[in-house]
Length: 193
Length: 100
Image (cartoon, rainbow over all chains, first blue to last red; front, top):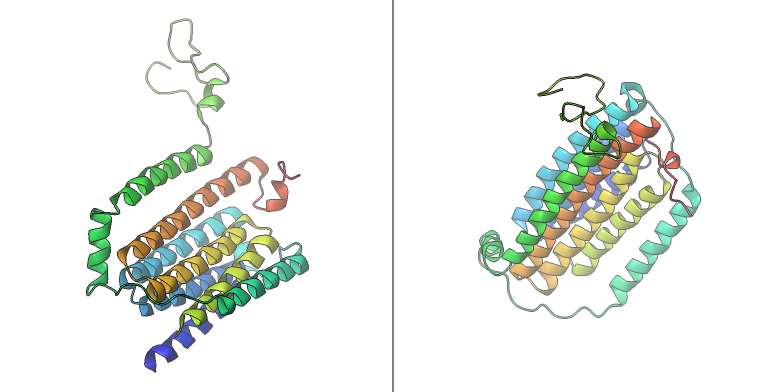
């Protein structure tokens, strides 16, 4: 009974928070609304006995919202991020498409004859996840690792204001008459230049 | 709390996120919509795991979804930074070079 009540409360909070993200009239408020929605979803995941995943979802999302707020102020300045605004397009078509997708998903959810539960949960679910990651499912983690590393490299390359092609043009082996690298830098410096 | 109810909530989150991702003009707001969609997927995954097959395999899949969320955020911010630097704007409408 208590679990059911908590589920309904968190579900209402998650959906209301999600709606509020695109209804409130300032991006700072939208960030807070999204954080509330994420915390509610994390709490529901904990109710599904996924303690570890639920807690890291909450922690990760709170940090992400904090970073998002910083980026928002950085790109838009302090006032636009906090002031009322409406920067949307195709609202009607988007709303219709979202409603159709929800109707299709809801229909499928109630029409599919879901199978009976297979297997039973381990006594300590977090430990069983740890055992799986370090044992039979290690390949999954080994695959995620290079993906995350590639993401770091790609994000840095994209965000870097001056890459090597900005500095050297098409000829990356450009050298001065003395044989030193000859980058096109606004401020000279470094060894040999 | 039944499987259908949890999936319904996750479908609602997914649909709200889809609306946001399609209707917003600011890149960061589009990312918020995508985040909501992935959050719905995460919740649906957790429900399917608990009600249908509560083995460690499903938990590992949820970790992959979380990793996808992280990658989306990092690349989204990087792209937003590039667009802002080159166009002095953070709107999707100013980055439609590849639009058909």
